[in-house]
Image 1 (cartoon, rainbow, N blue to C red):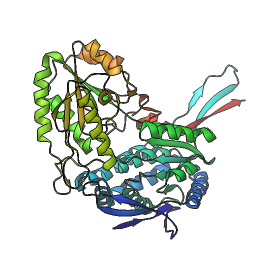
Image 2: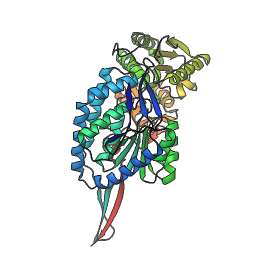
Image 3: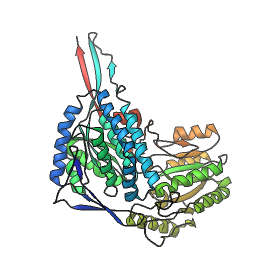
Length: 474
């Protein structure tokens, strides 16, 4: 069993007084690690270290910072077997998927390293003839990075790589469900030879996280998580008016038109709904099917759901894995039960399996209504509610009738229909004839309650900067 300690100033800090955070494998419910919870003294030490380091880090040229990130990307690939092993044990993912996540994290790290020569400011015309206005991009300082459990390796680098290339230092709080992989990433930081204090990784209680996020030396909070977690981050940010970048909940609508490739759509929608047991913020969460193809499409969906088996992915990588914990499974099952009580029809799934592990079967619900909880609230599990519509205007109205606006999907062969939806959907992303995958050269940002700011691409990188206007009179 692992015993993980916090990473401050490029060292793993052991404390005999620290409380332990137990880490369980959700596939078999066995204890796989104990992580030392950072004390208040640990948190303050990390903040001071990050603040001191950032003043030196920002003075390096962006090309020099990029070189460190390239070394980190190499180290992530080199250590991907160890990172993958830790991630598989704490998340229930297959070893193959977990290792690939580490390699993909190296890819996004390398992508942001290549922004080194592309962090641009602006020259703005002045009203005064003998004057130039120069708008510069500058780092914010120390950034608190709050990481979710579902893709903890990739998301950790998705946050810190753009923060680092723009001259910030970071304090990372991994999810208490999946901290071990973060400490394997810390070994990659050591291997890459980063200056001490630039990257600090600590497991924390909520109280300690509050100390970090409300400290005056922390200038930004970036979080991927639930709407509730986003509200808490906003509360923290008010103390010192820290900047926030929040990627929050989603309720991805998928619209299937009568002219769509139905077999392709069914296969991809079910894959989206069952990948990592539906624990993706952009997974399809509600499905709108044209009434003329409804029966045919439900038949295809049932076949795809039936073919998707679940179980311990350590034994078979093709199986759908577990939910993160017991509470998540209970919550999802209760949502399904309430939907059935409210008139939804259970087509497949909808039960708590016997045996070890927090598994839940792929579940399909028909006869759903727009006002149902199962349609309005994020499920974050392998449950798909289905509704019908008669016109594309009706489908668009239903898709937009929602508190969330992260990703969206439409399947159609009519480019006019596709563009009408693309130009009118109330979401930060729309995927046409495919399900979401968050290309890291794009911009992953939500509308409505799905967030503030965003990740990925040029605009995600610029989230970690602030501007300075230089008024140069000559």
